[in-house]
Length: 350
Image (tube, rainbow, N blue to C red; front, side):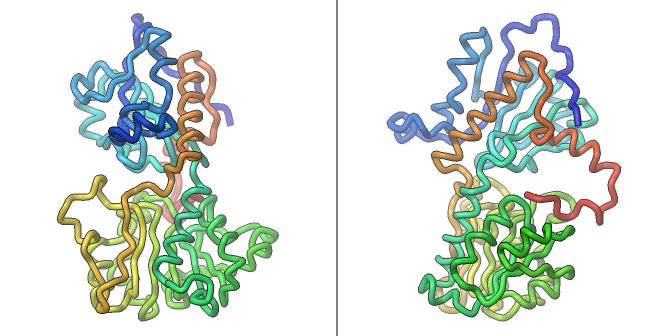
């Protein structure tokens, strides 16, 4: 698949303004330069861009002058259809330094021919490791508590499959997965995982459910009151995918009633999460079961190095009019997705 080269820029191509949205690292970022995904260190690309006469800014003023938006999924800059239409008239390219671009209205960008790209695969190992740690946190007693447990993943793509791989040594009773397409036979055999094609039947068999699918129209609010009613009583739920995949009030209610023994994750339906977000304080009947943390599973130092390097590669291709790698282009995927039926796109590998 060959992707189109970048759209022509205005005649004053020199001096492009790049706007980046990262987390404030404060003193820690000043002392540790490897904290690349911060406002202070700007993915390590500021010196490279300014040496070519460009500008990197974190100032949200003057969006009309911005031709490139660089954001992370951990502290995202939300690009809505309204912003694309009214405030981002000169925007040509949006880059997610990481994986997951649901903070960007892909359809609006496709309509205005704005390229949307992300650093595909840059932090899948980091997230898979966090899932395992979250399961251990909830279930307690570490290895002994996992003996005899059925663990299942919603989504068996790049992260979900790595979660299954890392669960094999725990000798779980069974590993299950729910996805729109089966794993290759050899891959399924390697982790001894069984596919369950009906989601309600899938959750009814699991002691632990982990969510590892992307957020889009087909998955928003997927884990709601109705689906939770099919969970085993006392099951554990881990979500490091996107907060909006789970109905926040339904999860809090299920935890309070004991339907869920615990809920853990690092993703919130709005980020940063408001102070009164119910997931900050929810508990099970025993006063525990809350494993929520800030969104950092995919931003380890190793992951930051990978997605910073990937962002620079995307920018180099853009500035030199070279084609982008097909796997990085979300706008090309969205153009194709618009021609698919809902059933064909429910769980594209994450």
